[in-house]
Length: 403
Image 1 (spheres, one colour):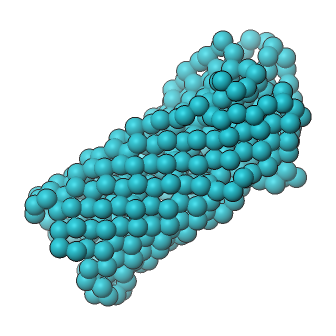
Image 2 (cartoon, rainbow, N blue to C red):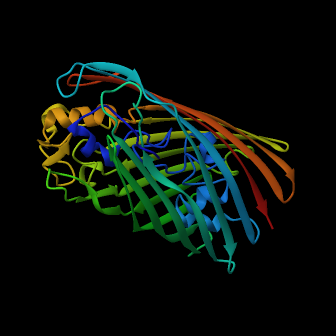
């Protein structure tokens, strides 16, 4: 979640909001379930049969009714490392190449589920919803800086309308911070945003089916970007996209000790303000498995996301409604070449592939420890005269209590 510096460029301005840190092993700039200590070890699979409170509260709210007992609580954290290499040919900014400054993040996540009645369960949670960032301070001509942090507090409610079918609703109250800097000028703006979600799960016996929808999450930052040389600042909006998620998972009726889940996630980047200028809609397939052996759970997963970037011919002449940017004291028009640079330098979570592993240990009947690790990677990318590679690594651990 933190933007940082790229080379000098008008692109910088546009890039601010869409920088390039994107929560490692995430989908675009969204985290989804990648930082759940259980779902994270299964490549984010956990919408149909979540294995901890975090995956339930931040996944499909209808899954809350799968709670065993009356209360469970999960607390953990993940370490994230993001890396990137960039080469430019001088068409937008000075010729150069270099590696992004190492980006390190420690991301907390926590959630609780509480049973109200035999049919009703509510949940609360807090985690990183998304973010972006990049840093080329030692390898580019100028010193632009961008940091975008987005944290969400979730409140969920689920109700079992029958022994097989549950419905749920969710609300996310998000807090965002955007820092923008060009050479010696920096600014920090904060804002809040709200999104809603709906979910449904249905137990067919051998498999559990899941579907849920999350609305867009709009974050409007006031007076954060200079679009001309007047000295005035313009507003900039970043909107996490609306999404539809379908899931299917095996149940103990099929395999007692083996869980296999597959999720498909559709993200509507084409209509997400601030992202739609450079990104397009994506589909992600997440495959995860968990095998229980006595007190141990072994997890593994793989996910694939379709190409995020727009083709050059689809790029326009503005970003988040801004058609010009103040770059180095000059009013510079935003065009396809600028957007290509932005995509390559600041907005490039271009890892299509994500491979993860995880392990859990049941310490006693009330306490379980979980750990997960994952790496995200993709092919080299070319954007006009810019070439880039990107990869991300994450490792995390947590504890879950049940009462």
